[in-house]
Image (tube, rainbow, N blue to C red; front, side, top):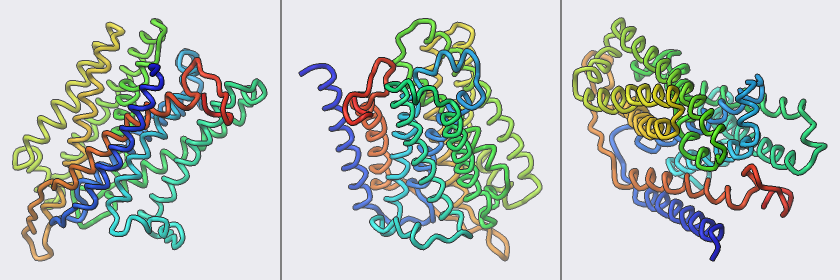
Amino acid sequence: MSEREGLITVGILGVIAGLVIAIMGYLGREVHAITWGLFVPSYVYFALISIGSSIISSFCVVFKYGEAEEKLLKYSRLSSWFSLATIIPAWLLIILDLTRPTKFYLIYLSFNPESRIAWMAAFYGGFALFLLIELLFFIRAEASEKIAKMKTLELIIASLVLILELGLAGNLAQVFGSLVSVPFWYGVHMVPLFISFAILLGASGTSLLLTPFMDERETRKFVAKYYGKIVLLSSLIITYFLIWLFLTSWYNKASFDVAREFLAGRFSKIFWLGTVAIGIVTPIITSTVAIKKESLVALRLGAIFALIGGLVTIVSMIILPQTMLPEVLGGYRIKEYHITGSELAGLIGAFVLWPSLYLLGTQLLAVLPEDKPKILWIFK
């Protein structure tokens, strides 16, 4: 068995294992006290990674970032595949969270324009479709000089992907931000927070899974600085918005009571260790080293911490405020929530599926710089 055949086998087995584990999680799921359990923040997490990685690559194509475009252009196929492969676990988790997952298509057949959830389905569908179109365009451009010269079409596709991903991130944020019933979420602050987290997580995921396929030393050094700057800047922006989130919560008692639990109460260990230390401070330090030393090791280390901290933050920010809901006549309705085994199985399944699907695509699709599409116009 050749190395490529071995990697294909690993990818196929990983995809099967991930799907089986996730579906077993659905079959054994339990009822819990809150409305949106672990499946919801988990799908948000994967969606933000996909959106963020695509925002970074789309900006590069649309706004022509000089050296960045020159160094990273040949990895555009791989980057598009990364974004597409990452959105699939998000789809899986949100479908499994439905009461009747096999009927998910009904949200399209009975589309309600007043529903943010319905618009989520529309944005997800459009985003995935144009990611696929973008991927096919980049693959065919590698094989056809005529298509490669269609720069206007490339710009249009990249612009549409950028519009859709920003719309998806904004609408996803306001699914939470428009809910008056959870005061800690309520407000437009959720939009810049989600977009900032998307860029941080997208850059981190890309740093881990794209850089192993980069051979040229100069490109790897450039990527360490380029993505290091993105991680550093997005971490600082997240810090800025989190500070203002907690400061402005002072003016709303119901929101501040939850904020106080994050800062010095029941949720404080999760916040200070998971969000601040692991998710923000460590990536700031490692990305600074990556920029100064042009170090991929430092970049990847920071990416791991950012992905872990990002997951902790998204899960805690979505789940914990639901356990402390204000009553109309004052006081709070406190709900106990514990992650169930079935929810954990779903998340583990998604984490197994994600890199396995990505690996499988790198071995079957013509997405690596040296690949030429030979079978059915897109496969190696």
